[in-house]
Structures are given as C-alpha cells and as structure tokens.
Image 1 (cartoon, rainbow, N blue to C red):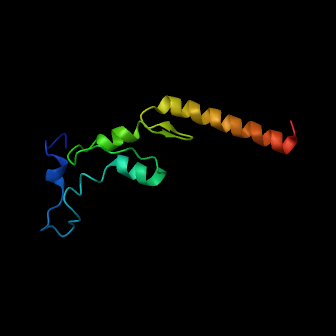
Image 2 (cartoon, rainbow, N blue to C red):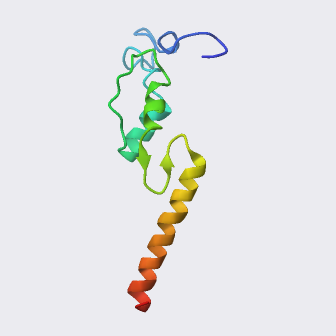
Image 3 (tube, one colour):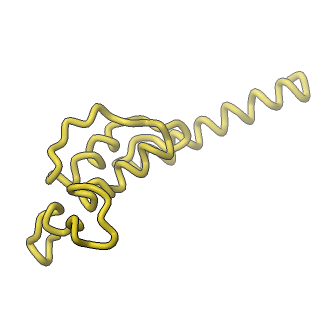
Length: 98
C-alpha cells in the first residue's frame, strides 16, 4: 500500500473476480483481526473499512497474558518472566512444601 499508493479497497477483489468474497475483503485481512480471532482479545473496532492499520493499532492496546501489550516487546518479556517465576514458585510450594 505504501509503494503503490492504493487503498485497501482498491486492492480488494471485485464481484467479477473468481476469489471475490465481499466488498473490501482485502481490508478485512489484517494482522489485528487475525490476532483478535486467535487470542479472543478484541477491541471495539471503530475502524472505517479503508483504515487498514486500525485493528492492529487497537489490538496493540490489549494486554495478553504471558505476552504483554502488542506494541511493547520489552515489557512483554519482563511480564512473561515474572509470570513464569510466580508459576515456578507456586509449583515448588505445592510439590516440595517450601
């Protein structure tokens, strides 16, 4: 899209195309939508059809356990280490009675 200057609507299939699904189908194939579908962490999409990055930007504001926020890799790793540390501690208490 950056190279061609086309909008996602312009890149979508049309009713005469063999692979046509629905109007703006290419716009709806965003990483934000895939992540929402897989994780169940969805935003309240207030996106226009042509705003291709909107869903991903909104997904990035959701906290995902053992990962963190979608746009914050460093704190996600810290969050994951802390959560695994707590899980390890609890398991040692259960198993070894420490």
